Length: 180
Image 1 (cartoon, helix red, strand yellow):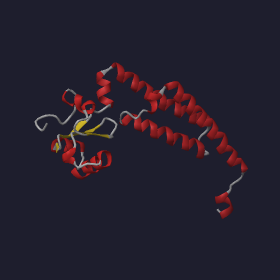
Image 2 (image 1 turned 30 degrees about the vertical axis):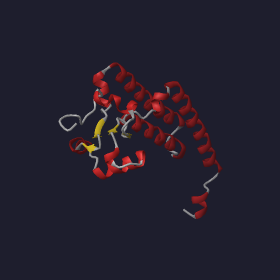
Image 3 (image 1 turned 180 degrees about the vertical axis):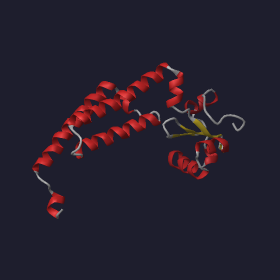
Image 4 (image 1 turned 90 degrees about the vertical axis):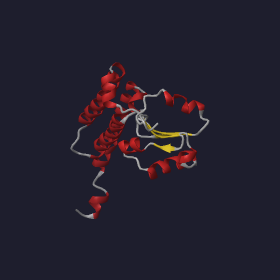
């Protein structure tokens, strides 16, 4: 293959990419609008997987000559339908909800890291310190709580954040056993 073929293989390929892009993107917009904001909410690991898979599917539709537009549409619709079904079932069944969504984990309380919870969630002290510095501009000792949320993000609460820390005593957080 020569340099000309690498840089430009012909107008037919360019036109195919444009048609596939408009078709795939258009269906993605319609499908996501119809399925609601929850589809891209990334509230748990399953949501993140679906979001990444949708992006990967759209890229494949755009660039792979082996995938017809109808096949790409079927893939997008299948992913969104699966996500919708899991979210629907999660709202109606605690068992399904527990299977697809992890509970938040309390990693630090009143400036004290909770080693057992950190070990269980595979978070090092250095990572905890990085999160605290990035979100609170403080040291670990100056923080009321750090929670590893269900979606993998961290919430850092400073002392005096009454709204933020009020629910920690009642929340079903992991890591609150003998170490809390």
